[in-house]
Length: 154
Image (cartoon, rainbow, N blue to C red; front, side, top):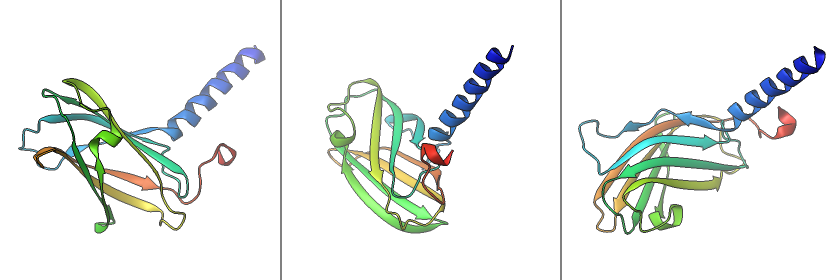
């Protein structure tokens, strides 16, 4: 009986460990009345919460009814409502181009500096095509933890 309890305890520990590594976050469109060409299904953030000085990956699952040959991702970050950072990325560096009709994934990874303050942040991302037409615009929140979240810390 203790062998099974040990396995179930291990399974529960594994589930709790994995659930702290990846988190899906609530996504909202910038304009709820707009019919965007790219429909965002969800955002996964890994690890979650994000650890300062460690790589973090934002994976955005989306769908399009038209092929996208290229474009830009414009990202704006706010900390407690204050705009603190902007960056622009080539869409084709974050996904495979041309983006075919149907489901696709945009993934961006970066290391946040060790001096990044912990707390709640919000991110606004616009996807623009090659002619700067807005294909989608989303907003979501995320947290940066107080320390690193290595396996040793769990």
